[in-house]
Amino acid sequence: MRMGTVIGNVWATRKEDGLTGLKLLFVQPIHPDGSSIHTPIIAADRIGAGIGDQVIITEGGSARFIMPDNPLPIDAVVIGIVDSTEIVDT
Image 1 (cartoon, rainbow, N blue to C red):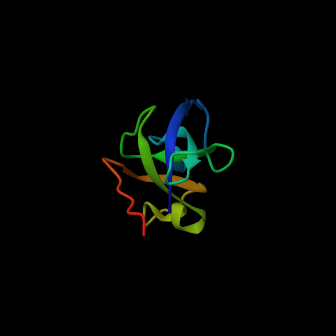
Image 2 (image 1 turned 120 degrees about the vertical axis):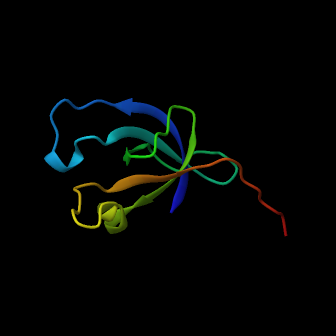
């Protein structure tokens, strides 16, 4: 899992049947200090994240199984909207 900031939306009028009803978002992965890690990715979203939200995403094979009976052709999915974070220096 990693954190990211939603920076935009993707609209696709034609997409794979299994993706119907899923919102697609541009997410900029971030370090704990908020700086960008690499280029933005597209992540599927079922929980209602919006532009500016910090989110938790998971990628790879785990993302495909957000619907247990129907694996989806996705590589990244939003699994949480972050309310707050706390990092303690050691």
